[in-house]
Figure (spheres, protein in one colour):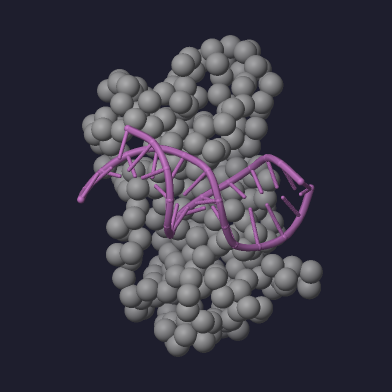
Length: 273
DNA sequence: CGCTTTGTTGAAAT
DNA sequence: TATTTCAACAAAGC
């Protein structure tokens, strides 16, 4: 389940491998038309052919190939993976798109669930208008959070998952951030205090940075690199996936409930309602 | 069979 | 009427 730290891990791994190479063509091995959000592989090829990959960047959970002219943007959704090693024979049925590069190497998009998406565009306006701030930017302040929260009534977890407020948090890290902040997931946004917003800001940066340092969390299916390397943040999780286990702080069993249609883990003692 | 995941979508609620 | 929230959806493995 790639969230911001996982996408950043992929970006760091891939950047030195594909930068300064040119794209020769785009391919859809089977008719996975939805992967390219509307356009055909042929049309995609026409738009990116012979362009060099200048930079690999990230915005929220999106991975962006900045080309000499235009952008090629990937969203991994649940099970998407991007790598350069040639897929095994059994893996080809999950390759929903691939690109041929100028040095003869390939860039493969493997996606078991096929929820992943690839977008070709001349600018990144389409993404900027839907995403909120980057968690590592100076824009993440207690004041920003409080302003975003104060007019709303929904749960604080729902707000953390809202990509138009903060881009990059998903289910795992939202639960972890709330634990570090001592906030119950169902706390109404409007009743989150300024002091708690300060705690949230610190928890968001700390959680995401630590996860990036450890190459993300491999909980179910996240691997990166050319040899299916897993992330090491799993051992650092305080609540996610620890249902029934003792809280690391107070030994109270971790509870799992359902909030905004997502599995939600918290410590009933450290995160009182 | 039902549960799981994300972001979009259109509908419903406020 | 406008804003905000939410259930359904898509896909397939377990």
